Length: 253
Image 1 (cartoon, rainbow, N blue to C red):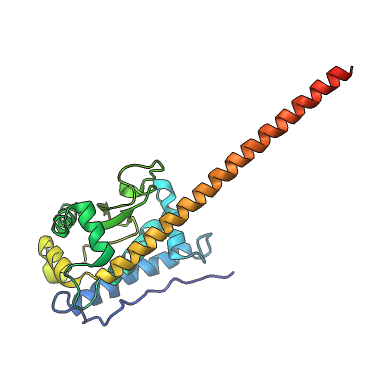
Image 2 (image 1 turned 90 degrees about the vertical axis):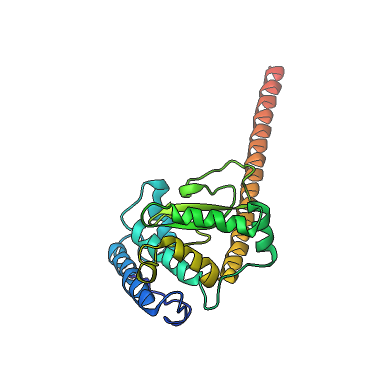
């Protein structure tokens, strides 16, 4: 039997690199204990199953199961969420983004300040453990990972959503990893995250990937639509030819 063990990825910086805004103790505890536990539990859950050997993203999609969550979903999604979270910060982060990302934020939230207000509100009002996300909404993304296949005026826009525990819309993040440094002062943590920690370079890179995936999906859907239309047209031609042949036989008789 071939198995593929999922690995615990380290943050992309030394564990003390975010100080004084996020301490080494927080990284050691939250990454070294909590994040590690998700990965180790997931490996135990998937060994010898059809999930063994799949990518982490593939496991999340399979175990989300259209909202009817399978047992491995929580550990898989939380492992991915935490990878995503560490990569969303950098030493000397915070401030304002630039370029197209800032233009889209201004377009969709009215201003950068409007976005920050909405993002902080989503994070602060998430009940219990959970996440707030800045998300690029293609036409198949909706709050809570529900599928919305119909186009709307909200398509291809940045939106802020929040989700409980492991659920993730897969474009950006905030998490509850503040408690060692900030205890229960969630609003203070959110402000520090936005002003001192967030990596806008990571956000911009993910935005480009999200737009590329959305465009590729649109192309695939258009191709399937054309093939379906061509198949229907071909079927109609066959039917017409069959009817014509019957008429010819009748006339011959």
